[in-house]
Length: 118
Image 1 (tube, rainbow, N blue to C red):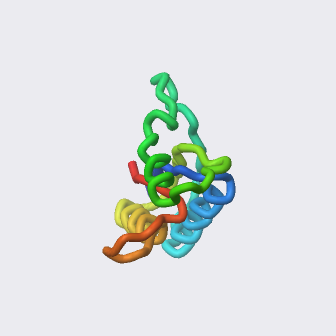
Image 2 (image 1 turned 90 degrees about the vertical axis):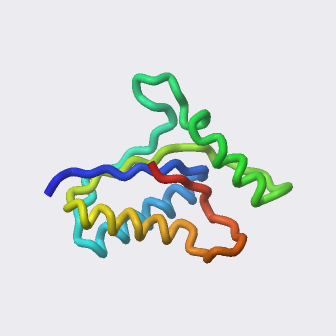
């Protein structure tokens, strides 16, 4: 098995980040993959670019979906996850996490944690 990476841009507070980590852990366990490690980035190494700059549109999305509400301690971060698994398993885990992050159908809805996948 190879080590493979998943990256998610998130606009979350600590509770939201813990929720996303839990979704990833559940998806990994269901596919019998191995979670090698994860990291939360607030800046990209060797680039000078912050996650706040890279994912500023996620903060805008949250503000648009939650008018008049305080964003509290939410911030734009990148969650990087390393998995030991096959490519097929990696794809299945990625798909499961994406579908679970915001499971509403085609109609208008609000995601608990605004996100994007890298």
